[in-house]
Length: 502
Image (cartoon, rainbow, N blue to C red; front, top):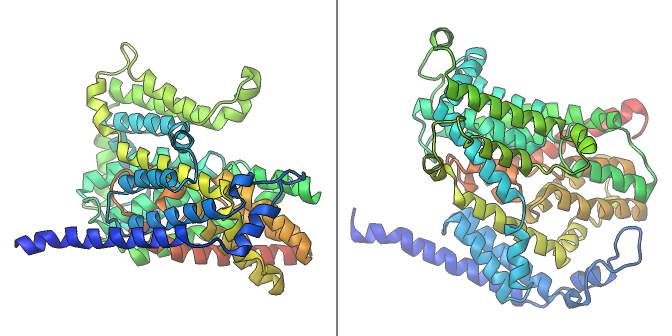
């Protein structure tokens, strides 16, 4: 390789960095549109007369600066001109330099989030599953059921994620499935960023969990927020089963669409795994009994899952809120109790992907300040403000598509619901369109973050393995976003037609 060839990537990345800076600065320094200023000044908290945004935001300048930083980060995240976590950290610096917020507050918004602890706990659990041999054993069991067809395995992981995530938080489901997927890929010798099967399987870990989350109100924190806003702002009370009537069919129909999209963008390089189905069954029978290390790991892993599932039942008797990070942190600590495991901390600490943690930390901070400056609400109004001018099917499609696209600027499903659901209820009331239909459709899609890795921790969990890039998820995610929006619109039209309304 010549010196010039070696320099080309450096030159290319330097140019991309310059372009990202130019775009970011151009947006940041541009005058705020009158519509942005009007949105910020006139916005009030739902059910009150209290202004939504402080006077310091009313000029729109902080909002434009936050939007510019987001544009800068998006260019670099998609092109990967810089390491993704470095881009995120730069975004935090630029938010400070452009006076969007105070440095300590910007940093604490992300680094003070318990998601950091959750990831550390999950990565410790994952390391023990791999090192103990439990991951290998479970993957053999799964493969003995699905067979050695790569397409069937991919569908199986999507289906498992969808079913589990209807009842367990999507982050927890991704945390369960990721080490199993990685065990299969490592056994097959699939190389990160090179193997199409590796890309598809790891993306399926995130997508299955996200899709299943729309099935029931318990699937993700954004769902009960939507139900609460409907009750408080529109006087419409929907039951658990009312939600499931639309959510479950939508999730089950998006599942095959996601499978087709993954196969279309990442056709597996091999039709079958190296071993035959008969060999897989023979391998399962020939495996020795579980050793003590595997049993301890399985006990801790299963106990963690059980606590995640049973959290709503045990919070009351305990008189406390159990955050999702608490079981993960407890599990990580249990492994190091006397007599529990032969592995030492020094054997495990190298398995923790600090870059992935920095990515989600910076994403949370950036998304929060897009919300605090009013830009997120302005974008929602800009995209969805004329929704009442089109037929009902297009209303449903455009609302779901708009929410999915706006999810790019948010780092939390709950924040997405908190911002968009009141806005959509207000739009429904103002335009006379069916409030229940479009709000429920929007509520279903606040967690469908198929495009950008940084918009939900669920995506970061499999992304940490290094098997796919931000660009990989973005290009396939855009197509699935359109497909999922169409599916939800069709489901809502069909069921409302049968019921005679929403």
